[in-house]
Length: 576
Image (cartoon, rainbow, N blue to C red; front, side, top):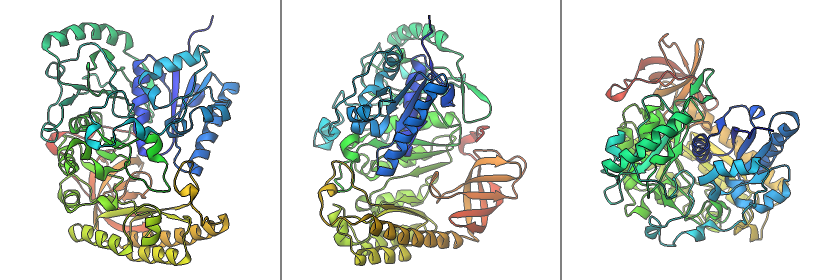
């Protein structure tokens, strides 16, 4: 008689939004009795959080699933499960095309992921979902979406009915986020337990003390049975992680369970999900759904929890951060929220990503360039610079308008970091369009540029367009613009020599340390090598340094001084 496998490894592909989703899945799996392991070869079950953005990302996801399936022949792995964007987007089609994968789960399966995995491991065949347009699951009017129940939003929690909720005051819940959420129903975030358990439970503040006492009695028994699991973190040492108590979840309102998978000092924090824009080349809204903001108190509560667990920089992510709050009755809510997050004890930096140029506004620029603790960092998705081609893409703007926006940002913060992505080879693109794009990039002086060659995406408007370019033409244009982008960003980095920057230290190896300055976003924007630092430098420290050299987009900087952490919360002793 065999024992039901309980170990699981999570492999995450794609963007920072997927990182958040994986940590939600990790929290749910821990709560459901699974033990997480770092190495897929040591897992009874491998869960691959896939990316379905563009053709290259889809191929990478498929290759990863196939590689994981090999462990079923050579290791202890008994099941490989696909989740994430590729799984949601293709559902039963992916399951049929990849019989090596034991199940394909969609977003609707996340709430009871533990039960799903146990069923799969017991030999039950999972019936994969039929792909559908998730935009149609929510009301057309943004203001009507907050009250809609039963739609799965990864990273937002769920509305599963549960036992009576816990009184936040009795549970030691922070209530700092009331200002930004005055127009919405109050939700509060549970503080991290004193024993250092790495989970967060965001819950409504609606229970009476007697209800909380009743729940706590059952909670104690559950906690006793779940304590003491040991999992591998990214650090060489092991962390003892106690599963969160699902009995303490609210009877209504969002519930988020999260367990960190990365021990570093930066963590993504989800602002919203979905997108209401209709860019002709993009399939994301169809499988991520319409735009839905998380409530400010929910975001702020999770920021508190992250800080309490060693995070020093939060990276606010969504499909479109500039739309935050429009469905909550306040399109300028982001301006208020970033200021409140920046005041969270222990955090040293707040960074906002995924900004739509057409939705940028003076108040948001001012908040991002003048609020202490908020990085003057602008992740602006231009996509191209030719006005006529942008209209064909169903986007707004042109080279001159984008240059005006960049000038406005730099008039308020001359050293602000500005990055963007562009697409070359879009159907109907002419040589003149490419010249306009290259001229724009030469004049814009961006810090980081991602260049992508166009490929048809299933179900998009652009897939039906005429004027498709052949692969050789797209490849040639991709090479031309990529080389220019490398020259432009290298020149921008070199121009920072002599500048004083603030660096978040992310790794230390002997006499070498590495981190990121305010203009450098995680993973894709380069890094800064720190020299001449003192022996007491620790991962998670924020320091000032003078830039003395550059290599491509990367900087070399000489240590100057530590930046004090606000309100006396010391940086955690983290390992990379």
